[in-house]
Amino acid sequence: MNAFHVTKACVAQWADATAKGDHDDAARWASVVNEQSMADVIQAMLHQALDPAAEIVFDDDPNSSPTSARPRSERPCSSGRALRAETPSPLRRPKGGGSAQIHLPTHINGSTDPTSTNQQCSRTPLPCAPNKRLKVRHLLCGTGELGDAMEGNEPKGVREVLEQLAQPSNVAVHSSDKLLGDVEAVATKDDEEREQNQLDALRRKPGLRPVPSKELGAGVQLTPWDVLHTLGRATALARRGAGRGLAEHWGCLKYSQALEGTLGTFMALSAEGRDTADYYKALQSDELGVGFALAVATHVLARRYPDHSVSIVPADAALRAGFAVTGRDSGVSVGYRYRPQYFAEVWKPGRPSRVFPIACKGNHSGASASHIQLASAAVHADAVHIGGWADTPALIFSTEIPVDGPMTVHLLHAPGNGGKLTHPAGEARDLDKELDQDNIFPGIQPPAVDGQTPDPVPGFHIEADHFAWFQHALARTGAAGLTAFAGDAAATVPYLTGRQGRKRYEGISHAAIGSVQDADHELLGIPFVGTDHVLRLNRTRVEAFSGVAEDLFEHLAKGRLTHYREEAHARRASWPTATWDDDWDGPVSLHPDGSVLALRVLPERDCRRCGGPA
Picture 1 (cartoon, rainbow, N blue to C red):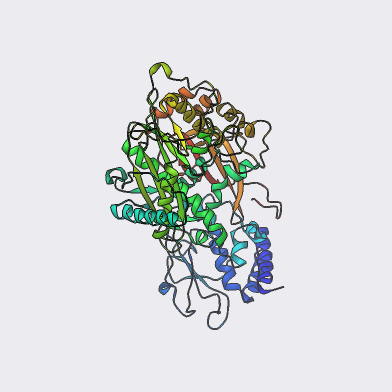
Picture 2 (picture 1 turned 90 degrees about the vertical axis):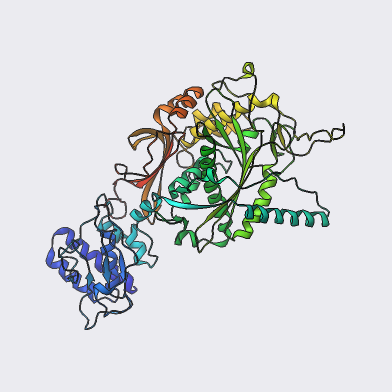
């Protein structure tokens, strides 16, 4: 056995003796532990595991005094006390040998003297932080943070991860004339190269310009958990395999430790987010780029149209209600691989909606890569015309996610008078009725030139005679995304057509691979219904919950979409804004559509490995 396993076994014996109240035996095992080469490390880890609010600092100089140690950071624990634990270097014993000493400030070891020491952990147990469910025995059996830390991984404590997810940070947003010039230069160069290589010219969104500063306001502030909530909502209807609940519904949870930031600073990748294998970085930047882009898009449009609601609808799902998007869909295929990823529907009950195609990308490479991505996004955004030729407004994004600094959302928009689904009152549709699947012939018709009508160009064209239908399609598809996010497959089925994937939600859905609406919680004083999922963060079981406000979900489940939209719109500005629920004891993200995403350490249950609480 190596030194780690020997020391770990000795600490386990000490824990058993302490639990039984046999202080003499505990003292003997403590002495054995202190003779081990890893005693300094083990005792420091034990103290931090028992009180995660205490910050461990390993000094390079074993002769330095506790007051001279420089902590990495200080943060208040849940009781409001600023705590810090300091220890000599784990590589060398204190001069003269003896037991390892862990220097603890006021209230940890019961002394008000900052130079006092706690030499026998078995005799002076530390208080656990409030609501801490991880016990010593559980840690020593290798199923908690201490097991990971003693193996050399030194992950964050789960409590710290949860608190970080709820911490608001600034998000850098860049939209300027210089950005527009850089993107236009890239697009021009690309067009020239395509012409030299005898490739078809690409059609890009015309009239791009910077977003007005008044629509960005004083800045955009988000929590990491809100970004993941946005990503989770966006992918609820994505076609990512039969294991829908894992591949789609909970895909955002893999980034639970990827982002960090503090109040007054800008959000960036965490150490865990930076330590991603190269072949996963493209996926990471793409998916996080979606989360940031849609969060910023919602912010911008809510400021532009303050008396409207803003809903994000996946473009593929909405378009499939009327088009054969790919060759795999029934009908005449559009045959054009470029299209926006999302639509933003800006709406008020009983009024025509305004629709904005959104194209978004992400990268780890830098600003020059974002210029290339924005030039490409302009092609995707122009694939959908709503109304007249080249008159549809749009938003394009590229999120720059460097490994060594704050991330930046680069943004341009195209204004336009199109996109508004104005239709005669007599053509207004009952949103509560199921959507009829249409078969719109693909192609976008350019205007006539010198009396000659040119051939249609590839893409999706929603003309005036389909405005009422398209508003119906957006509303129903958005509702399907909400019921799917709440895990209710049966409620999702009526909101989708066959080509939109209705069959994927029919039949029995197994909780292990799907999303089953069978959970309810009260969060921030509001009852929610939805679905949950248990996973591990640094070997500690945590519970994620996604759902919709109970009264709003009841409208959706009973097919009362009109009532849902009326009530959701009326309450859009009255939802709580807190990012942490003390009773739930974890981060909470609540969106104006009534959806919620929450995370916490799983409540106590038997630990199979050691008989202690999980």
